Length: 152
Image (cartoon, rainbow, N blue to C red; front, side):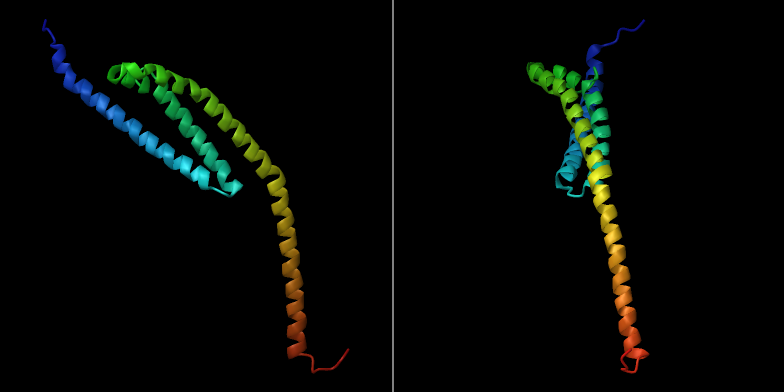
């Protein structure tokens, strides 16, 4: 039986912890990108799928942070004095997701309701305008090329 030296596991543990920290930095960068896209989107039809994407991302991201070997574990090992602050942030996850779910539903109701109705009405108006312009163009073309200036 060989005795394992705990000190020999230290570099591997540090390497794993470093990798986990880098994963969180990358996740937070991706999250900031999604947030920025959501903040700058002015088209509700584009916002709806973006909010769906943000919701999926946050569910995975929060689950990872809340896991025993997630952010809680990293902070517990690296800065246990910050665990109280972290716990408050982790508790906010449920509220953030609930607010995002509500917003997604509101956007869907607007897009499926008033926005869809306005776009439908706009399409009908545009169709009528195109028909109107086509009729005017036919009259103008006929008068220039087939009528010889005679009144009806």
